[in-house]
Each structure stands twice: as structure tokens, then as C-alpha cells.
Image (cartoon, rainbow, N blue to C red; front, top):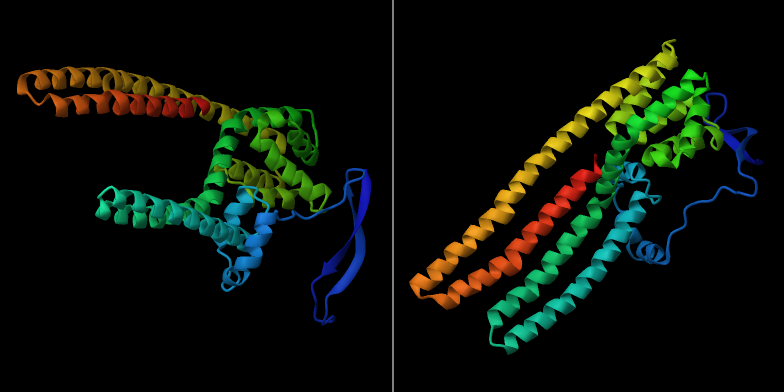
Length: 328
């Protein structure tokens, strides 16, 4: 391990009108490694230069800052908003070109009104949608991380309880948990706690408290807050870990059972809505086409059902079932 000397700055007190530099402390990093900042990409630097004054004109949104931390997106809120504005500007230019081409093609074909509507709706609607998606990306990423943590928390608590049963120190438990990549985002949260203790020199309880404040998972947050409360109140952590491991295992079994029941209900719905209903609809429309005499119009409806309705509904059910199966 190599060492890096970091000066500690103490806040001004009554006897010291200016900040006082305390003796430097040493934190450990891997041999050959140096603390670095997260650099901006070329596009992010362009966005920052272009929209810096706009994003710094008012204080950053605290919710956005919180979501960026929970999503582990290493960028400040004002820098991210500059990136959002730059990306939205590029999307607006591209959609304006597309909308103009569509308007010209429609007007040359005689549909002037449709061309004008599409030429306005496509750029404006697409730009607004792009801004909303980019603005909400940190929140959705943080929510996705929270779901991944909840899926792996039961298995990771079994690992933690096993380490605690062997009388391993709490800081070493989180360090070993951070090395177990099989636990996914739980290991990532443990790695941040280990970073705070070994690199930043924070005590383990403060690091756990900070981890509870920045994790996107409510269950993992409750677990970390329980660790701090148990340790500060003089309780034993080993029984606490064992109880939480049993609790999360029981909750995981109940959630898995609920998802399986939901998948069974969706399978019955699939047979009714996607298989039986389109079949009866095709038969009924074919009979109407033969009896009513409006074969051309009915034929177009049949093509729409066979070519669009059935495939889209099947792909929709497949995607939803796949997403639900990933959470089991």
C-alpha cells in the first residue's frame, strides 16, 4: 500500500479568525495509485463552456444532486444540466431538419396542412420529450440501482451474518463485501463505505451513516441505520446481522412467490388477449367482409390486426414477462 499525505483543515474558532491547518494525516491507497478527479468528456466540456452562465445563474436542484449521488454518476448537478441543455439543443436541430424534410415531402404530395403540423409537432414534441428524459435520467438510474440492491440484499446479508459469526470487525466485513462482485450494487455500496474509511479517514460509523444517506435502496438504508443505532446504543451487532439476514430471506421468499403468481396471471391473460381474442376478431371481420360487401376496408383492418396488433401485443407481453422474470 502507498500513502498520500492530506492536509486537514479545521474550521475557524473564536480564538482563530482564519482557518487553521492541523497536522497532515496519511490515508492509504493502492500502490502506484493517486487520488484523481472525474474528468469531463469533450462533449461535457463543450456543454459546460456553452451553458455555464445559464446553469450557474440559480442554485442547483438539491433533488438532482441527490439523484446523481445515488445513481453514482460522477458529475456535478450544474455540469449535468449543462450537458442536458447541450444534448437537447442538438436533438432540437436534428428534429427541426427532419420536420422540415417531412413538411416539404407532405406539401409536395398535396397534404400541406399535414406537412405543416408534422413540421411543428415533430421538433417541438421531440425536443420537449428529450429534455424530460435526460432530466429524469439520474432519478431513473438511481431507482434501477435501488431495485438491484433489493434483489441482492438477502444473499448479501447471509454473507454479512456469516462474517459476523466469525467475529470479524465491522469495517472488515464491509471491505470483504465490497470484493464480492456477485452481490452487484450491494458490493458497490460497501465499496463506497470502505473508500470513506480507508481513503478519506472517516470512522466506520460515520461512513455507514453517510452510506445510508446516499443509498437509493430503502431496505439497505434501514439496515445501515440499524447498524449505527445498534452500535451507538451499546447493542451487539452479531445478533442484529443474524436477525436481518432471516428477515430479508423471509421477505425475499414472499416477494418471489408474489412475482410467480403475477406471472401465472399474466400467462392466462396472454392466452385470452393475445391468442384467443385476435383469432375471434379475424374470423368475425372476415365474415363481415363476405356478408357486408365492403371487402376492401375489412381487408385493410385484417392486415392491421395481423401485421401490427398481434406482433406488438406479443412483443409487449414477452418484454414485460422478461422484465418480471429478471426480478425473481
